Length: 185
Image 1 (tube, rainbow, N blue to C red):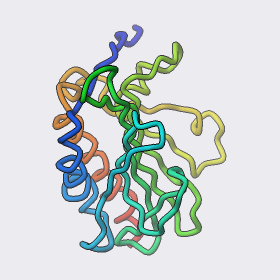
Image 2 (cartoon, rainbow, N blue to C red):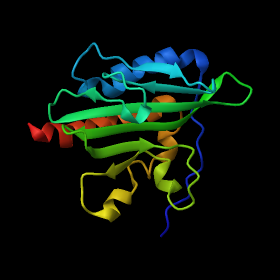
Image 3 (cartoon, rainbow, N blue to C red):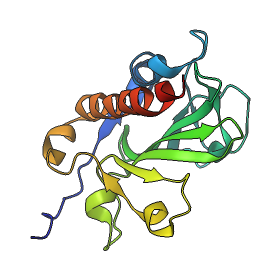
Image 4 (cartoon, rainbow, N blue to C red):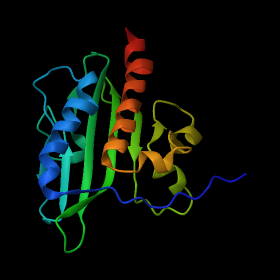
């Protein structure tokens, strides 16, 4: 039986909510794995003035995909970012990407947690729109290309608003903490 088609859910926030969002990312989503209570997420506007990014970067990288922060485990480092695009002629921004990457201590991608709520890929959108995992630390090519959706059965509930999506994403990060980061102790 095929998976039910998942419609695009528009997760939006007002421009004045970015400071609150930055604090939520720091204090709710990432706090359980941060190495230091002084690390804080930040947001910035890109040069096109229509895109805002929330990230946490301990090492002052200029490329978004190169941002990293230390976890409490010396075996892993991580990255996190969200990309928000302005909705035409409004003060609202829509979530394009919410990405968490876990790297081994040699900076090799290990496991990735992604959410692409507006993905239009005809083949994989049912899995990519929901929070999903990519397994990178494997020699198996098929596994590396897979989008392992974590909320395929409660898609509508987690996409009710940014708060419900954040709660789900934070719980997935806790799962990775419990099952991967803590298993290395």
